[in-house]
Image (tube, rainbow, N blue to C red; front, side, top):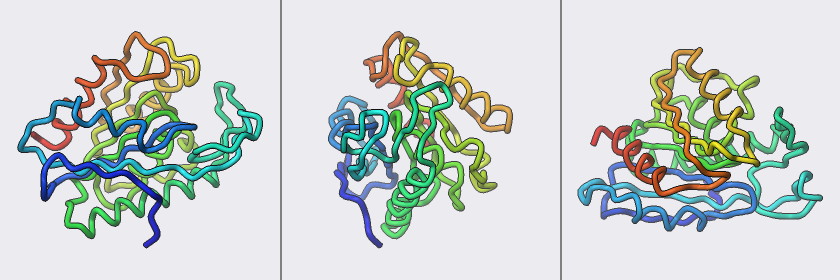
Length: 220
């Protein structure tokens, strides 16, 4: 299978779990790679972290400037008009990473999707539509762009979901994180929703919650 370029880090040899972590608009896989040692995970918890690089493409809201992007954004209003076709292509590219982890011997229930901002929109689509049960979803400062079109997988009805958002986010308003949480809770998903006194970023308190979520998802 063809895979996007990506960075990989393993907390120890022969990991028994994988986290596929998607960056935001204009960034790349290096954006979140430094966070791994800061998570303070138990030494005996073996996780393979995968940080794919989004392809470069023109982004309408940025004047057509070419940058790493999982999909084009047409308008930045509260409805967040995006190129859904491009988002679905990116989702399929991430599904390829999931398939590769399965081939490597990782149980599907120990594969976690994480995404920040634009990457989180892709992570929503991948994790909630995947035909095999996955280990969890971490959605950071993001929005559920395909909530109106997604076919929810019965295999992931029990998927644990962690949503984290900044109270003062000027890029992705907190209201979008709340609406995603409510959409999922209304359909019976187990959702933890946490907010932090920050803008469109990541804060130290959040890193502790990210570590706790990973360990909870993996029953550690």
